[in-house]
Length: 291
Length: 235
Image 1 (spheres, rainbow over the protein chains, first blue to last red):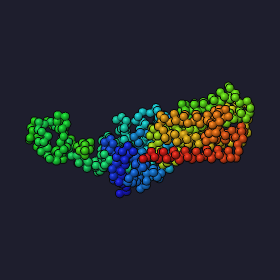
Image 2 (image 1 turned 90 degrees about the horizontal axis):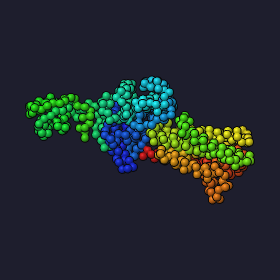
Image 3 (image 1 turned 135 degrees about the horizontal axis):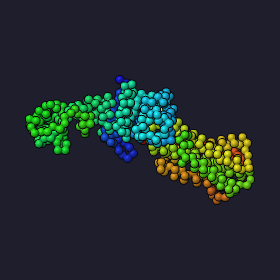
Image 4 (image 1 turned 180 degrees about the vertical axis):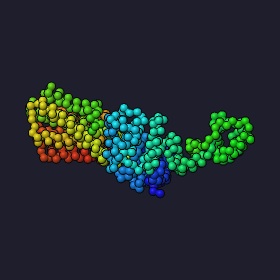
């Protein structure tokens, strides 16, 4: 399998002493969608900045398309949407995309890109007249105009409403289907579940998990049961030593590999137990189990 | 360029100050009564306008783009740092040339002086060189200071430089010490080149070579220092 991106032995410490990454080893394959997850300060943005050449590697190496990120050839095939990119307010939508397209050797037609993102009616509007969602779509247009083989998205749906988020996700799913590799950081777990082939979970600069979404859910337990019971936490744990059981308000939440067996044992031990919810484990609950 | 010319908060003072000073000192309070002195006014205020416009037109966009994150976004593209700085310097220089052209036009229309095509070409050549120098200094300030500090620093640099370089008031009325120290300033050399170009004064070969060396050297040094600062920001 072709490795599109590789972080090898990457450690990074900021001038204030904060250790952002510790010996990160991670690869990304051509055509895959990799979600980079983790809490604030986990090292996601640092990993992205190193990949994009915005930070220089202190220890280890970063390669993109087999090249150093500082090489212009590497950036020819790259498109990115950063968390904060204050675009010029005095240029029109079309001018922004045309300017960005000029940086690439084989750009797509700006109008075609804008059409794909539903911005055709706004081509002559200046940035300061656009809504937050429209601006985000414009930023996506800038990322796509260079015909990228790799799209790097640092929290691409932050600050947009639910409709715009759905719209952007549809665009990303189309890109994924067309073979564009996508590296995505997000706090919206649903995005990772819908798009990612693999998930890399960072915690305090270290890679804690790397695998498919299904593998991560299995790690956290396949079923999730919310219930109220008069039994103690210790007694409940004894019903299934492999379950992850935690208090939740006045009740409990259990992440289980065999929900049916636990249910039978629970109702046998406590016939008055109240079941509030029984569902397949979410990615979010699986991530919580990694802490 | 489009960003610059669509910003009235930037365009108005860039043209307003040099043209305003010219109107005040050359027309309303005509300190210059001879042709050479009047040509010197055009040269000096053209240089003054170039100095200010180039520094602001280069430094402010860079500081703003660093602050808003668009600089980082551009650095993820194949554009590259050298091309980025060259584009910023070129746009600032072109803008500064339009300011210098406005001063020249106003001077030729209102004063009883004339310039041949060679003098006009020499004026613009000198202005272009000076514009690159001050655009370089503007970039350095834009790379070093945050958005809210950059305009303050640029003002603190360009105004004294313009006055001490003899672009606003003649050097001959200033203390000897300032006259002697002014040769260290790029504004002095630009003024000298401009005045020689329009026929307002003579310039020796040594003075010409010194002016070219100082302006070119500062341009290169400022660009290299800017590059160093921006790359250091990658750590």
